[in-house]
Length: 339
Image (cartoon, rainbow, N blue to C red):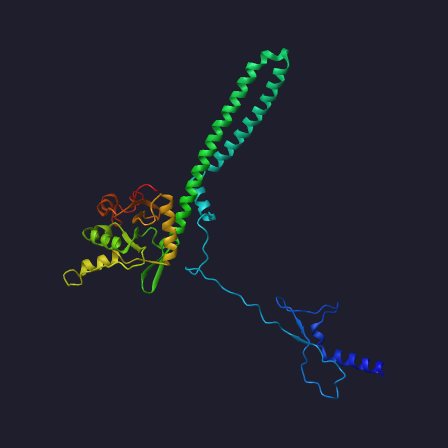
């Protein structure tokens, strides 16, 4: 009787399990990315008639694992400033196309001189241990000195070239990080610094709100000349306060007021990124973090000048060519040397 009961239970269980969930090899077929779990809780409440049979197992889908999404302040992943991106390395190769070749030959000459010095050293040891070869010692010493001198010269050249490469990569990386910073042009438009490359020469002011307000007042006599040279100001109050910009709204000054608003229309967005970039520049320049500074960018987006204190608006007018006219394209590279 027990045998008949067990056989009937096996037949009943085989009818309950869906056949399309099992592979012919004996492994259950599962949907990629999900694992099936057995839930031994009864699907239906057992009655007294079938109480002798254990409840059939039930296949259930597990709930998907909870994932947490972390967003940065700029709503995009940020990389440490110490890392050099591939685009900065490519720009470095373009700016100095023969540097890699020179560094390769320097290493080859260092290896050749080191090998020659090793051979000369072994010959010198042999000559010093054999009195019959004593006459060869001066020639061996001369060759050894030449090898040591050649290794020293090419090691110095390689060190200088590598240092110049690291400095250039650091500068290009800083410029790339600067180009990714965001600016608000209007309430509905946010752009990056890179979008203004070839269009405007930015002057970044970083300091307390009182410093920004004083810079605003000092720029008033030079508003028109600065706009003619494509200068746009980026005021960044690092103390968290809002600088006061007072515009003359009278009808007589309507045109001048619109120009001054255009000169000071840019507002930094994601201030944590701006603060981090400016703090790095101050650290590299050995400037106190509390010191107010200014940075002047070329029209190609590279830094052409910087300093502590108020920006020299009159010097900008004297140094920078206008962005419009027959000389604009020819004088685009006359923004000054790159820092």
